[in-house]
Image 1 (tube, rainbow, N blue to C red):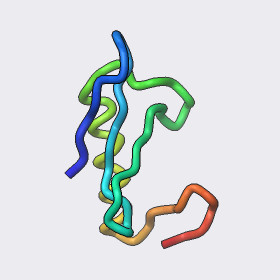
Image 2 (image 1 turned 90 degrees about the vertical axis):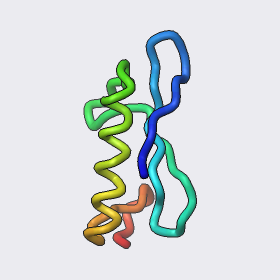
Image 3 (image 1 turned 135 degrees about the horizontal axis):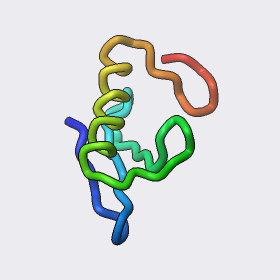
Length: 65
């Protein structure tokens, strides 16, 4: 289950479970903007987990799952 971590006064990081079972993290959205709310970070991480379940997750180096 995705969750969010506070990283500074107005910064949050989303944590998500990767296909290999390890935890990944994301600090910026698709537009390169940092997450300024807990919900935004958590929801973004949850989106990654949905992609993993649907087998549409793209590994950062460009390969597909």
